[in-house]
Amino acid sequence: MKALVGPQEKGQDLVALDEALKALAVVDPRKSQVVELRFFGGLSVEETAEVLKVHANTVLRDWRLAKMWLKREMSKEECEG
Amino acid sequence: MTPERWKKIEQLCHAALEREVSQRGAFLAQACRGDEELRREVESLLAQEKPAEGFLESPALEVAAAALGKMPGGDGGPSLVGRDMGSYQILSLVGAGGMGEVYEAHDTKLGRTVAIKVLPQHSCTIPSASPAFSVKLGCSLH
Image 1 (cartoon, each protein chain N blue to C red):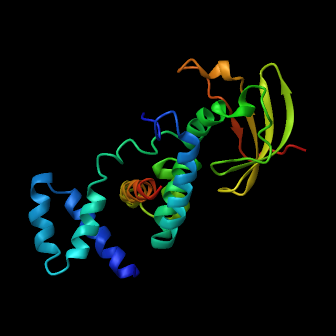
Image 2: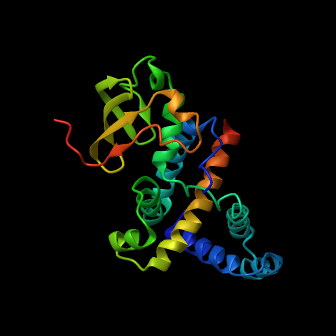
């Protein structure tokens, strides 16, 4: 299990993640929900699938792409200061 | 970005991820021919494949706990009341003692009231020690 980020900026990083999630919600609401349910709600893939009424494979695909999207968005924010 | 455009980007990302890294360039060149912007968009997402692997795999609470432990109120300093911690708005101090402080907070993600317990800073110095705070979802504080 790897932490979200290094130990120094965890607080700021949660805020950056929140901002990135809001942006993701505009592009793809379901992916943003998947991240909220899994990361903030602590739900498993199966539980998330049940809540969103989609197949578990869909959750896995959404989860993977959402994390890549958020990483890219957050690295953009870092560059822009 | 139109939903159709995003759908296309998403499909190409998944299709590329299913292929060997060495084959992705040729695949995208073919799939995105005439649309360089599409290719750049897909490639910029694929570039995050490795960085995103361990990302968000620890629950938010563990991350927030470590951050709270470093904040002034985590060890008898100024109160955390009125501060935001990720999706938690710290509303009031419910109680404090030798084992830490308990705050009432609003979980803005799930729209409910939670109790957050912040342990003294020395409790957070051992990596395997229990998290610096715990949240009881949905519990009533009154």
